[in-house]
Length: 185
Image 1: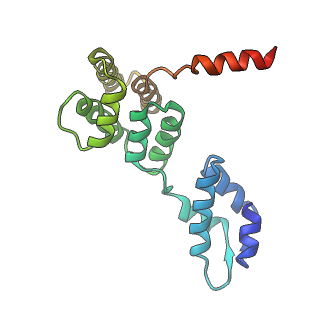
Image 2 (image 1 turned 180 degrees about the horizontal axis):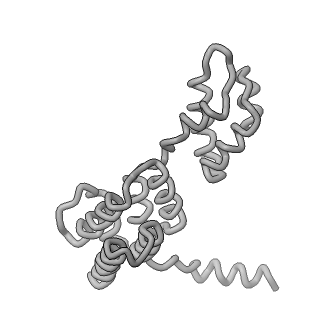
């Protein structure tokens, strides 16, 4: 898919460029194509893309955005939130900034002021019971204490609290479970 697009544009890509792009996009096809489009837009008059140029353009990923991470947390998509967290940290966002943003997200869901109003509203609607939000806030305080006390790696703490705020993975609807059971018989 990528090679055809590069060839169609009359561009030569150095060996490993498309593979590096796929790795940076975590094999997400739409993200891969968006990043490839950016690379093709920045091609010079020699119509060649080197690995160094690609690495420089890919350093801050388009999706390495704190708001996107918080949105994934708010809707409860733990897998996507975890990937976004890695991208946000790789783009240079500090662990403390991410933790503070999570505190604001949950605090906003509890009715406090937050910079992240929309994701906070989504979180408050999804996790309606005040006890659930209180547990998420408690997890944030424990994470902050462990991180500041040097008892845990900051990235591990952030991954764990991300899963805690996302909540349990939703179970498949009963109709889908019955359909799967009939299909295996």
